[in-house]
Length: 165
Image (cartoon, rainbow, N blue to C red; front, side, top):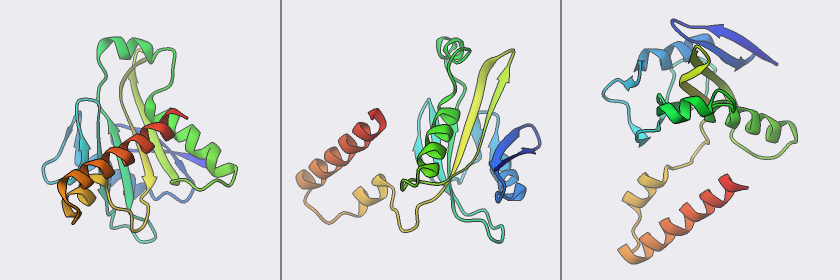
């Protein structure tokens, strides 16, 4: 089951076990489109920021947070008719989970809209234990540069193929 959790300026949709304190911690890290300094990004570009978070809340697992930034005007118009990436991924992960397929566990999401126009969105999933972000793996990999590049390219292609499926 899911519940609504009202934060400072956001209303989250979350699974029943998700503690509101963990979501408040995410809100405290983000000021509008800006994420506070010191957050260790896995990815940070014009579209989204992704980071791991230890919420420090008893019983709450390590979190993987995807914060989708304010889209360009054309994309904001598009999202009048199609769901945000956060909502789309939330639905897809929940469908996979309900079918018993292994996938990251979706914990919470929100969309913030003004006059129907998407302002920002966020997806929170349970971090995969012992998983290592590709950029960290690449930095620590002991392979020679050409082999490391080829492995990174193959992993990126696999990821793109999975997203396209």
